[in-house]
Image (cartoon, rainbow, N blue to C red):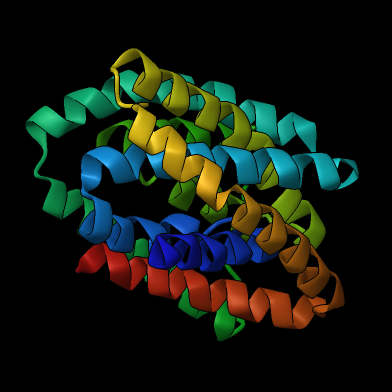
Length: 234
């Protein structure tokens, strides 16, 4: 039990600082400890709780327009993601996505200016791709974070607006788990145990982010993108 609480504390702390990255830490470790059938619904519940807490405590920094645009365009990409699983080998897609994230993070670290996307058009494209990747390989966050990075959002807007997207998306995931019978008593019992760790990590992450300079936030964010990229290559 202690190791599960520790995993969630570190994962949610990372999410509360940067707005994402919790799955990068939590899912591989939880799958080893609990198995995927328990780890997936448990993580979904905890991620939803973290998104809600961060959204409520940072609501004034959320740009609801792109958050909703990304979410609704994600819905249209979900059916294609289901089709992609059947026609495209997972390895090729994840390698391509991993290389893209490594290139994006590296170029930003090296101060190489990439074209800023037209937010009136590309927001729907990135949301659509997120739907495809999310339904097929559960990596929808990579597309959303890439969009925020290319748009050069301020740190406060980045982490808050991401929650405005992840919360409704998380609701759909938890609902699907409930309908499929994955929200068992064991999952709910573990969820109750880790709630205090989620709350403490969220408060601590908020304080760390508030004291972090914009430059440091951006550099660490770019490093996190590179790490996520390599994680997808493995």
